[in-house]
Length: 563
Image (cartoon, rainbow, N blue to C red; front, side):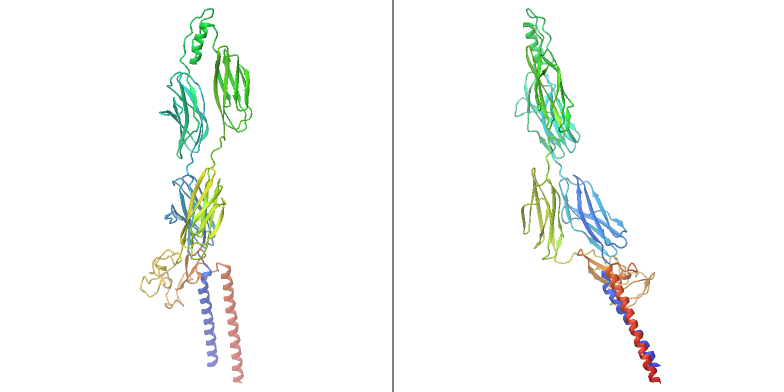
């Protein structure tokens, strides 16, 4: 009888030993059943003063907090506010405002849940540089002895100031200026110049200024003010000369000729285009009226010919801003007038070469490891990339390149287009040791409360982010410093006194608390974990069956001996 009891005690001991071995196996492999989330930094979008940062995460269990870190150097340094989510995967973004135009910003995404932190790669994106506006000097109208309407065409992406410079010399030395404000947009307009000297030749030129700088038109236009008007005298055999019109020349000629022959001066009463601004490929109607004129000629794009003194004509299709000249002829000479027709979307704005993104993945490498440089541009013909052992010349405007740095390296990308070049850079760090995770009392490697237990071995640590080893979270603490067995429960959830540490896929440490299988759920958190659990259960079943057979065998033997 004592032998049978001994066998039963032996069997129970083997069962207990098997359970302990199974639980130890689960404990040692628990790190594969729970892991930090995966966080991926995505390319950003930019305006002159804003950046929209984008990222995604996956593999989350429970609550995750996500945010971005950014700065004007690869060292980053500025954080956005945390955003909280409970989904297993998702995307998130943050809009940065009040940034500096034409400046490269570096950024990366960050996420943390109960299983640890994770970081995405560091990318960079330049804000859009303010671009120079466009300006053209256009023809004048409304000419008199002391005034003229100086025409211009402009295009600006922001509010601008248009200025007309004018002087009595072609070099515009000592030029006077008159200005007006314009909203963002494009179109033709004019500024009235006043206080001019009669019968004087002037030159004028347009320029424009906005937040991107100042551009001056390449062309100056010449005009001559009319002479002051006069009163005609009575001529022999003729009628009384008429008073000079607003045209100074007409007044003088009218007076003199009227006194001699009694003839009236030819003048242009009106000359205009309808409409005066059209889309590319459209036509316009040119209209005019004259007085004391016999006929007119009209010249300009898709128009050339002789017409009646009071008439109109239709132009052909227009593709550029155009100046039309009307010359009216009478018995005593001729007079001319010009108008401008503005064609929208023409001239085309300068197409600026820009870098959409330039980044390295990964941005931190161990010695001998490689990183991939990737870039995309807009309106650029080619790129040059330099840094470390990389020296790419006239390379594809969009693409990638794999390199193996031998030290921490800054790579420079210069993209070149028809209107100049722009530059961006990315920094790749060479690691000698794994990147450290944030330090808390429960992951700093010290016995903070002096009880002989360190970090996860201390019952006072509820997780790796717990900043105090004091105040155990519940239950009765037992076991040994080695942490093989630690008793106590909290609301029925097993709490082990030993933690295991692994390195997650993104290269950052991830300390997991004890029995990962039951850390936050009674179910495994991965397919591998499920397979391990099945194998453990199967092993226990086989062990129990083996013990049962052994007991039956010993029982039979004892029975035979008894008889």
